[in-house]
Length: 217
Length: 280
Image 1: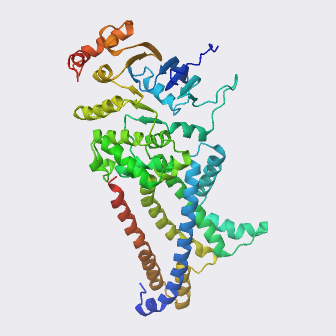
Image 2: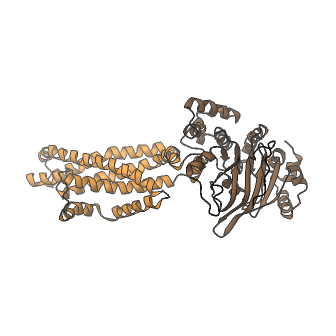
Image 3: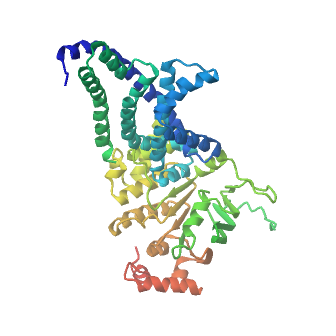
């Protein structure tokens, strides 16, 4: 073991800069992914095939292709088709798309878990389908989907480590740089792991808070 | 096909006209050409064995169950399909359907209250967002309806905090808050514990006395006998017998109605014999 406290301390500023990149990537992708997921989930339960089938295709592709492959494909594959994207853009597209696919499935499950009697009661009162969705179904579904979405966001935060492969100086890559610079492996990676852990903790707490809060009803 | 109809000024438009209603699920015919007319302020109970098509008939009236053939006319307006479109039937636009449904109240076996809203929230939701009432007016009307079903004190409670009977009374208030012209009750006491049935039936009884037009699918024979103006016995997708409750229960004419009533008598649950001797 080659843990040296001074190297650990010296690596921290560099690691924290990387952590900032990781955090902003995660936040942006979580927000965009949530928006995609909400719209995707609603389309997924629609009676209209034109809304439903494209979403099914999207979810199937994003869930079936490894995130690392998606990143590689967008970053190294697309330029050969004349499309050159910034690493940050590639990272956000890939992360948000994957997150959006998983959130779509969560939202679909949430909507479908609501008793069909709720929709029947709302429609019987003269509400349109969209009004019933908006006022009756989604408010109830949101309570059920928030804990799994938090969980999915946690996974996404950790998956951002994969963007280090497309030259982005995220937390992991910063650790790798410190390793080469200081010729020490243990100390920077101890810092990297610790910072990932600290960043995920708020999400873990949020998750258990939401689960507790919505357990009753 | 259409018989010449005379304009009669003295008789109002029927609250409900059902003509030759057919409905099937795949190979299974649930309704086989049911016809029925209900006058304003009339209280009609529909009884019959389970699977006879009673609930389906009710769901067809507000077109929550689309029917395959025939027509349903509520307060003179066709529902579900556009009238007079020749041989091809055209389903009416959703918007038009939504407008018609506002005037038809329905209460379900499983209450179906909105669990994320308070009792008052449940009652004012549709008046505000469907009828377009101001919040103040909706609250005023909603409180009135809650008072009528005796649950004004629970206006800020959530449905999960109420008993089944109370939830069902809120469901009745929610339907009434839309000022419907016709109320449908779909086995509203079937999911309730026996001791909670009475409070719901009492609410419905009051409503009937106030002159609400009601169609009630029920297993409560005492209610059918005491409150309704007409009893309809359904079996196997058909209306088998229809008549005044006293006549129907004391002297059913059809074999299947007789058999049904005999079966009820054979049970030790609140049976028709006890129902007939204990008048409310």
